[in-house]
Image (cartoon, rainbow, N blue to C red):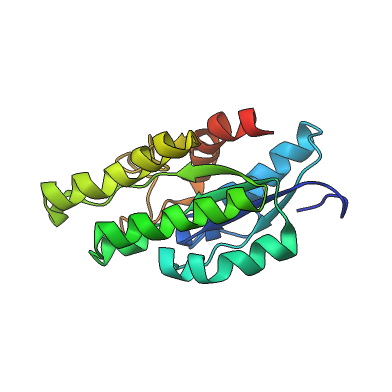
Length: 187
């Protein structure tokens, strides 16, 4: 992901969906984003600080150091899915995301929030409460946000890996489009 050292940074803080789990190097949506920015001659440097398995608590524990080191113009925040899959309390997930948004904004970064959904087998009450976190926080802070990162991907044949959780390499351009539509106004 090339850019001059003085270029403004887009910091992506996410989980396996942004880390590119099961996807060849250079083909995940974050790497495709860096390529798009270069093609469009938009002078940004993309830093992918995503880790497979990351939770909101893990992201929160790393965020201050990442903000200090990279001083991002934009934080793309894509966490919560692993918390939901572990059925962690919605209140805790919301608090962790809220604190990350506040920290990023206090550091002068714009925030793009990436919403995610969990499978319906967690029950309608938990599933709805989990999904509502993202829209509620986006509304509270007036953030650009993607309601569902895997929109047009999650239930489409050939777009998911065999585990049914991680998007395939062929899904990465569609994920990029979901993100790009909301990221572009922040650039």
